[in-house]
Image (cartoon, rainbow, N blue to C red; front, side, top):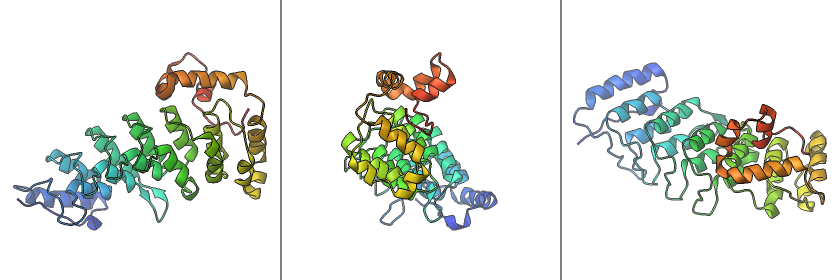
Length: 293
């Protein structure tokens, strides 16, 4: 059995993809569309198309019998590959082409909780990129927010690790998505790491701190904030240290926590259905307001 191979470098534009589709169609008779490369990666053509964000080729291969959840030598599915490469690391830009490929693969019923040989799911890879578009896509498709990798890290720890090196990201949305889908909160004694990672993005800190009924600040918090960020975001940080003191939070906040605790991983789905003003729904869903009270 043979399989038609192509060079992805020549397939970036839609017209070139179409030309390649014609060539593949001519050479596909009798070929095995699921044959893996004879190298250390052992990837199928679908893996390669997903890697380069080639949506037409992804559709073509699936329509001709490609196994959507085929795995390479690292136990990665095409969905995992497309998710990882959705961030152009050199430019720190997100690829709409890869987002489209991920949407297509999910529509083809790709397993959203598939694990690679390090036990990472596609959600882990989206979180590593701080890609809120794909994180939302995965979570809505049934991704489990608390799956742990081989080192015991869930997706929220991945976001925390990379927030400071993802300038194009919106980490507050990433944290909000995970918490609204039932992600476990950061261990309170480690909260200074949230501030270390997000000191220039107060909205992210606000989202995470509002997931606790109450949390008290300590000296590690203050040490984690550079002076220029403290000055730039003074109103926010003043509210943070005022609220996270010995005094209890407001009754409104405690009510929010009680509702969220009851709904748990259904917050994202149940809260929008409540007969409440939009402003209260946003409050319950941890929408940041720029200040803590």
